[in-house]
Image 1 (cartoon, rainbow, N blue to C red):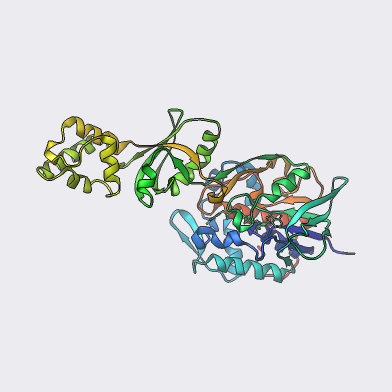
Image 2 (cartoon, rainbow, N blue to C red):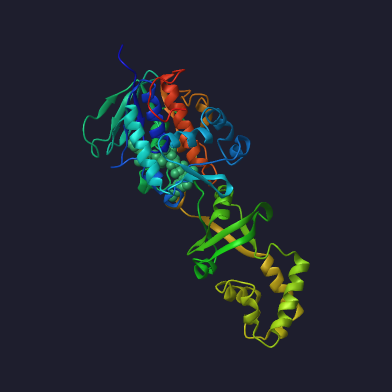
Length: 430
Ligand SMILES: Cc1cc2nc3c(=O)[nH]c(=O)nc-3n(C[C@H](O)[C@H](O)[C@H](O)COP(=O)(O)OP(=O)(O)OC[C@H]3O[C@@H](n4cnc5c(N)ncnc54)[C@H](O)[C@@H]3O)c2cc1C
């Protein structure tokens, strides 16, 4: 009997895992990648260190997803962080757990993860064909027939027959890595609905020129609150940084999912930063009084140096209207109150988000209601499967998105052969 022919489209995290699993199941597996090398995005993850999963328990892990939380549960139940860590360890990639449960390869090189995955896929029998952009999934009578390559950009045959296709083309963020959103069009042509895509985990733009003046400044241990149409909606403690056009950093990326949607609905968004979150209003009042006394006849500027990073001092002076050349003992109680209020509520109006080019992931994508969460198979086209960021799933930073890509890839690859038992001696099996 001839073996099942499977085409996996997209050699990212999800596609490599799916292809390896399909090949382990006995399928003749062809992995088509449009770029000249596989896994360009995976190489740059975690600032080149690849934070590939997180050790949070399942319930908390799932809470770190906006869309897709319920959908992901069966995939995580089958192949989760401990299985992924064990998988890489069998590929001779020892791992380390860092702050917040983030897991990295111990050598801190994303490239090691990429190389190991490619070696593993080859060993499992996957044929990886690069510079092969797929243009179309060919379907006849609701069943997969194969895939059609864009011959203007690739070599070889235009039509490649297959019994099943796993679509793992990723999202639309960082398009220079190859993830240009082609899969959304292919899925739509196959009859699937696409939840509108938006940049997620993305820097934000602020009104005025404050960000430009502060570009490069990182604020650590601050508390930030998000007000949407005047109502407090989110708050977080941690780090943010200024970019030439606005703000970025961990707190901002975490806020961005909600803020992007609010901006798209025309809502007014303001971020309020408490620069001294360890001090309540009374303690801050006492601290300022003490400082103004201590610095007495010295300029107010000297007192501010102990309170703020130097880049923020001119912004503080401009926004509070307190002249820097005054001596500290000339600062009136009203000015002290204005300073106190500003320190507790340094406000930034958010006017836009940055584009897909700067977004770590894509929110939206293939509607998960049309995909079976237990197999990753299409409910519309027989023998079509999905894996990774092409699906309408989006998680926080911290290793959640890569785990989702690997888990859905694992499940799609296993389901395509519907094999109950692993059947090969390849390393990297669970
Ligand atoms: C800068 C950056 C840092 C990140 N860091 C982390 C991190 O540390 N931890 C984490 O969990 N997540 C991180 N992410 C998110 C994570 O990288 C993605 O969620 C994950 O790579 C998605 O995997 P995927 O396989 O679904 O898609 P991708 O990795 O995007 O792979 C899709 C592949 O499909 C190929 N392709 C697209 N269209 C076609 C076509 N028509 N024909 C053939 N091939 C095609 C693409 O070239 C690409 O190789 C980061 C993202 C970015 C941009």
